[in-house]
Image (cartoon, rainbow, N blue to C red; front, top):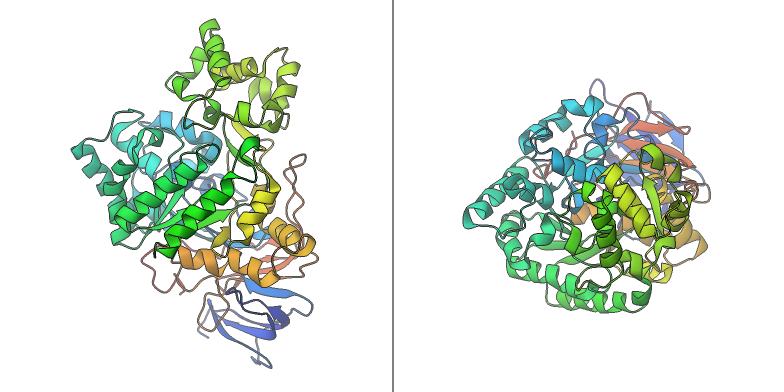
Length: 542
């Protein structure tokens, strides 16, 4: 070893290498930032040993869908809740709702729109360059990261940079400008492009308009991660839409947080959507999906607005006309749009992030909160929220059937994600704190839906390979030394919808790039993570 390098011999654990292969009792030798060997009877004179008897030894978990784009600088203890649940690599820029390539002052309306997802660009985050992909990459390269981080270009941000919230189709010149921004993102190290087809301003984009914007990603072997247009009544058609983009452009496709929402769609729509995916895969298209192990999702209050009202400013809903319009429009069907108020009911919609007079409502469902404020109709409460809080309101929608989640989890091409939002919500979705331990607890230990090696693969090698994170997600000679050591029966999520801020328990040791990152229920003082670029053919291992 050279001066400053570290090393460990992890002795006597049950090694799950990440590929889904059967586990083996083995030692793991780490030198510097790499795994040097995996086998029995290894020795390394002079290196400290970690006793892993009775423990699982796995690659670090790879979360390809988190919304920590700004939190990495804004939050002083960033990394604590991630490392506690075993996340050693995370990808930002998802759902099209990214802060780059935008200037915080000139593009303030978009930053306000995405605040419930990525939080406010305040405090130390003011030092983060979001105006260009090159500047954003430089910032990430020059700060101390507690875990590895990469990013996707977000199509919503790209479209806003080119034409704001304008619903008109792209002109030829605008298409060129948007494609140039995506190319710039790939040059700066982006692993691909994310779409948020459900959200403004992308909801105005036709499927065929995406083709010219996606082709640069296909040419450079990037991944297209898609929040599809509809996850309820229009689920099958929405899956077909993004598969069509992949077929026409040749891009590798991943469908984000694959699910079926709305009570009337449970145990029916998901099977049609799976048939579409598997038919595409049978023709040679590279199509995969990911999921989080919960029956509820998290999004913005603006997602409840019917299409007929999405152009209205928040203050409109403080008027009598605005309240009446919302009551009228939210209680009728709109073709191609998932109406959560009708499909699951106000009792299954929870307030997760709000301030002022509404802060005490966090954690309540909309029916309860409406009663607290003397509103006879929860739609009036929603209007009041919009008028007084604007776009900075987060919600949790208990929109899924757990049996559908189980069906998705069994698919061999689905990865586990958290889809965690960093809004600073007083009552966040518990997946922020516990998605990965929950998957192991529920899907492996309690329900026995997956074997341990299958679940570990869905958290490590599968997402790392899909994202082209070279050298990560696997325990083998030469791989990055991102390593977890835990007793499976001890690792637990403690966060719930009722008490969502419980940090995961039971993770004994985490190594990031061969250095201690988490020991004895606490993060290390020295950050060990790295900024990862798509161009890093060695996985950024140094």
